Length: 121
Image 1 (cartoon, rainbow, N blue to C red):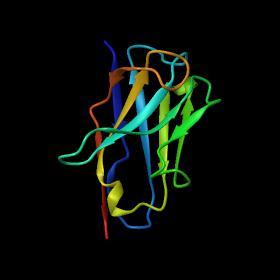
Image 2: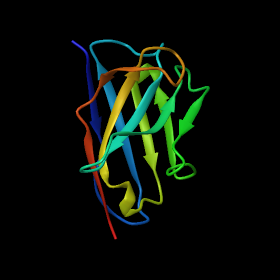
Image 3: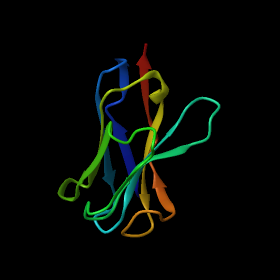
């Protein structure tokens, strides 16, 4: 069984910060890239950030660059998303996922259940 469990979402005021965590169970993913996605109501699911297997390469959507930081701890089989300077446009369900390769830009094979992030104005 493979399972990804996100945590850390919640309600924050504009300008605040949250740190999302995604822990993987049933398999280690130290050899694979990982990413964060988000989906607002009625909108498509969009890529937010991605990180290669060893953290050597990262990607950020233009809308979050400079505010969000993706990181990983392979010893804990966990990926993080530090979100600073949050604004209401960041409100969405956030999902973590595991890619099919070691880098970024691959298809994603496994997905978490999502965690809600709501930013009030």
